[in-house]
Image (tube, rainbow, N blue to C red):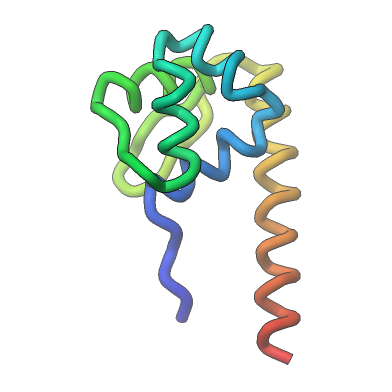
Length: 99
């Protein structure tokens, strides 16, 4: 059975899927663009404050071992569609590897 993705990997997936540039994310969260870039390239982690800022910006809430969508309906729909597309792509890739 495959191991579920870590919270860090889940956040990277959501950031890729949200349709915002690293600049836009940085500008709206107060996190340095270089910090976001290094996080996305797996060169560094994020501070608890940065996690909180990203969660609020993306409309996510941390519950146990995964992120769930919260208030902003437009962002929720966009993230939901992007995440579904991302997950179906990952499933297709895994299926190809299995065959």
